[in-house]
Image (cartoon, rainbow, N blue to C red; front, side):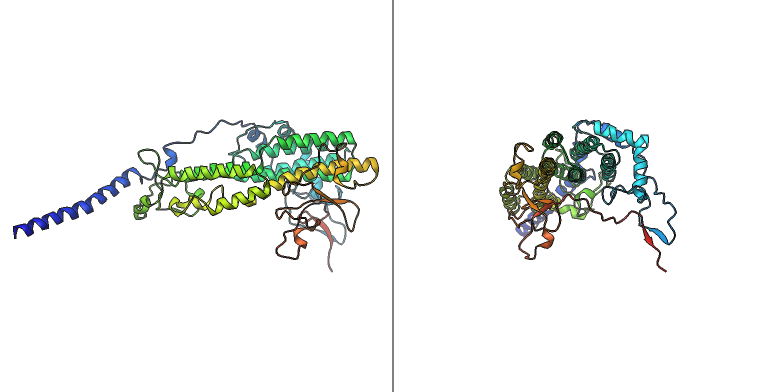
Length: 468
């Protein structure tokens, strides 16, 4: 009887210890890990001081004015959805200021001292690391379109080709400064503005004969500007890594070591949507937090992915793509790393490498068009191949980054002139057939660089007959 009593007491003690220790442990976790304060508060990121000159200059851009429409002729009316001036369409269509109110109002806006001085100040900024936290991507796009429009105005109205090229090479420099602002959105915005500048440079070269000396000088500037910036792949990888780590710091709480554990209560599927001061995030789901890896473990995996991605970016397109696909298959991140596995530098890695290679190709294509314009002005004919441009017009044969061979040149089938093309990500020469014309689903077509200016206008006001 006594022995049974002691056994029951011992059993009760064991049960108390078995239940009490985890309870105390959970209470300790609640106090030390789930206190509602993000891990970023325990080790704030030390922001490297950056030059605010770019942000200060671009902030001086006035609001876009409305379009002033003259009275339409009898039997006609104005159509179009644009209310304010739309500089996105001033680079296209026939240059006819009188017949295009959007173009007319945009030119008037460009001539105002505030806009002219702002654009000149932006062009004057050298390559550098500028502060971009207050800069909106939409503002950058507007400035780029205004500057490209001013370049076309100088070429069309003033016959100032030197001034037009200076504006566009300045736009290349502006775009690259934007791409260095450590924001994924601004990196892509800067890249699109850079492409806009290169397209407009090529269009002007196609529309006007260039001397050999002028073409060589412009190509030298373009190559120097392009070589001053890291690859698009590297810029996006670095920006994505920084954004993922900053977002993770808002998903992990402070522990005594400043490391932190994943907070499951009030968690959302998108890391960047977790606010820094989200208040108390206690809840029953946090009892599962010890099942997940801590912040330090997760971030070490993210850093590993970053290093491997940068290594892939240094390879040829073919080898880099294969390396990224292998990395995707052996992805070190898993569900125990919380939401980190949803968005890392590995996300869309092969696609970003394609974009980066396309950026390299368009630099080569723009330089080739400028050289071809000078060749055609001197010889009155197109070169039989790109090789004929070397070394008098180009210092070296422009390389297609997708396969390591020369860019391809092809005469137009139905009109005078030529097109340039790259084999594209499928690394197969489809004889200049664009993806839109490829019938087989297994073929992706070539990347075509056709810089002819289109006449299609979609948004700016146009005259049309009134239907009776």
